[in-house]
Image: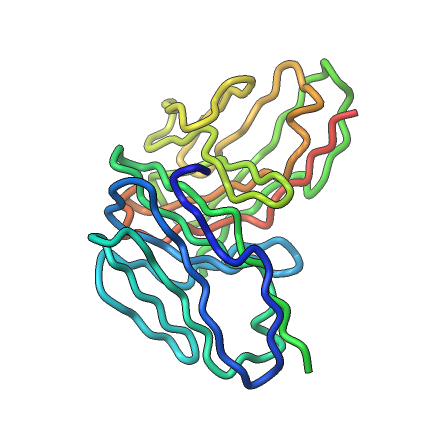
Length: 109
Length: 114
């Protein structure tokens, strides 16, 4: 939606390389979640952040609530990382997550 | 393992017809959600529920009804399906509804309205 601007819309990486996805928020955001949607359509939760950074294997996410942005870093990309990545921002009103439009990541040999 | 199952996996409906999408969760979660995803876009919240026999409007509720007959089941109802409702629909559940809670998603239902 308009509350979340996600970039890039598509990204192609070679195996072993690294890159970052970004979401900018146009309004106060209390927290952010990152999801990966696989080719079968299933959504998998990667991270929840209310502040700071979190790391899980080759993935690392950061959230800056003052500067209104979040990033997802992918290190040493593997073929299985391919999919569409979504960030979702917690709206000021309770129980609503605003999703970005997604980044379609393709990892090539 | 937490599980959210949706049915059907895909459906073709005619304009003006009634469509019911079903969702069942075995997570013992209080909160359940219905989202729609349009090609090239993120998910948008249609309806959600935090207790049986009660539903709340989300971001885009117009044209949709929801029903939560039990903690485990949450349905999305399109009384008069329209072309603009062609999309993929995702059901999700969470424990407390807090943003700190992980959302568990079903596999989605692809709805095509002709």
